[in-house]
Image (cartoon, rainbow, N blue to C red; front, top):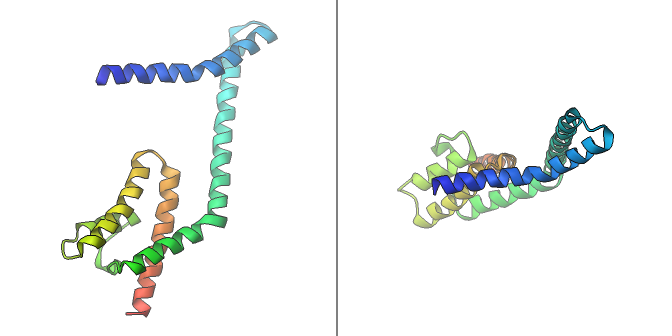
Length: 158
């Protein structure tokens, strides 16, 4: 598995560079034929990719805050309330993943509730491990807001 996987990784990485190198080579041939043009145009292409990635993430975050966060928070709050999750003050948690992991590990709770908690925790953990940090961050923010609302709800409606 090791050598073949590494070889396939490098083949994929080099293959993904081919379009950018081809465009840079074309620019080199059109402008003056020096290798400096190739490297400068390659840097410009990847600089453009980076700027577009940053803009996409900024716009995505704005749209998330404006249109999706409230719905996500309400949905998680309803799930917490419907399945009667334990009071958040019962556990020490720094993130929503910590809270759901603590609920999952609590042997005194109903098995069905622990399974629901596993679903929440695994959804977040998978995003974190897949490198989708923006998605994980958005989920954590929505889940933490829902947990805080649930805590207030439990304090006002014992």
